Image (cartoon, rainbow, N blue to C red; front, top):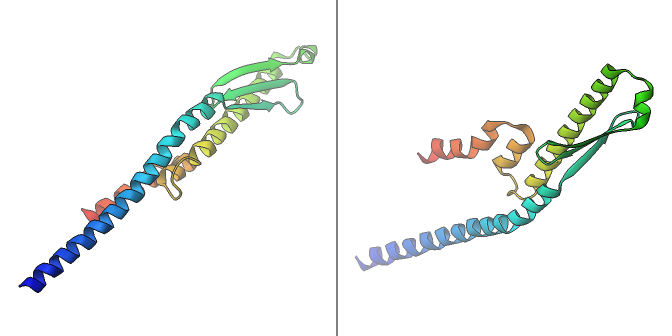
Length: 143
């Protein structure tokens, strides 16, 4: 009987060591992620993306969420006096600035997430399947 007890205690110690090692790994990843959060928030608050129209007459600045920060129109644009052309130029440039700002934000945030994370793939593609893939796999295999 004592052999079985000793074996069971050994198995318990090994299992506890493995669990502790996994906990330490996950906790370390959390601490790293948490410590970078303040820096990430600051970088996002200051993120600005500038786009110019092809002819340089319109300049648009967008923030981290793609919000419009500013629109500058060069005085030469008024020589044409074509409001529709100017409107299209502003809209096109604003769309490019917004898309570039969102891409820059995704890239920045991805740098603070664990490699191989479904969250990184979700940021890049918007695919909720990537975000939930790990949870789905755990539910399928772990019950």
